[in-house]
Length: 384
Length: 118
Image 1 (cartoon, rainbow over the protein chains, first blue to last red):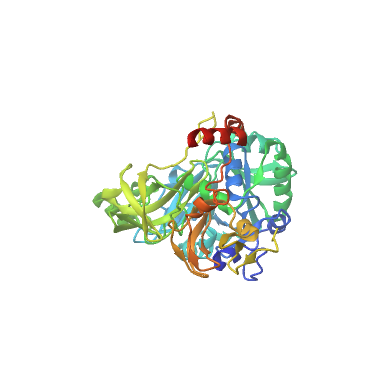
Image 2: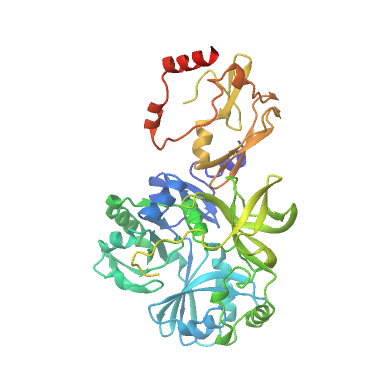
């Protein structure tokens, strides 16, 4: 067995430069396997990735995603500032609503993908990827003009994600607030939960129904323990970043830094629905308008391998032995029970059912382009 | 957990001498660290393997790991001929273990192969 792989994640990581979320002690106490992720010491799994994945699909799983960054943008200049930096149209964002959007370079490359929460007329919360928190903050501050305050609240906010078909009934037993009233991509602030208060949104990164709970970092352990205790009889499990990755991949959700970055545009990765050139000027708008009219030359597609070998980030995608693209994400999908992945291919190869090869250890493993998402939950009378 | 009659490599393989052959696997430590194994790639039947050189891979959900041979030699598919009980082929989690009841006991099997021999 190769040493490097085995020693990564062996026991408690002692790298002093890694940051810890407020839930670090709870993870260690639960026997989590901790690994470095974007500069953070994070739980990759507790009992096993596949077991945690299945718990989320069938019941519920609780994730610590406190490594994500949160910015508070306030003042009369808040909306114009962010509207000028993201591709989606904040004019369509009502009070109490959340919106998913890329933020692009002038060339249309994706700096980050983020959630924007409309807290008030002149008040937003941005939720960004951990690896990009510092760069995003600098980018936004560089563009800030007029009467606007940009505050990094990442250290003070813990983020818990309760995901799965039982998420609502579990969380509902801990709060008098009617959670059924929170529709998909809407939120409520100051929701009382287990004696604390938190912002609760019906959002997530798993393809299941569920909630994300933004709480004071000092309340994180209390809420974590309360949700796990309340959900025990429902079979809730703590779930790590390993299951989060297989869940999001099956759901066809992209990971910034893997599937998209500043060298790829929203139109190339299937996020064209988040680009609203008609809303007015924003950073990247001219480039994206041009690409929209000229058309893209490559696309991020899903693929399914015909055997059980796993495609990994960086593996070449080929046709008849000739390289045509590259894998950006790949894993075993525990629910679809197939080896699946995402990768870039020229437009001519992007149609579903198109046959390709993924080069794995020098061998061309047969693959077929698959319409995303690989997995879609059955609508069970729930929003979304 | 770690039998005294086995030898262990620093890459976490075990080696068990069985007469003139060496059986090879991975240690419980490695299996635990890998977690969620979803694919094993082994050498072609009859391939040569070399001391502490990769001969295959184990894929887990998160990572791929090389398997290193703790001894040089030749993969011996013909042990299926010489040691059919040792050379088992697959491990199955049964959907219905009751199906085994439809199989024969040793006496019935002996009767079957006795018939075919005659």
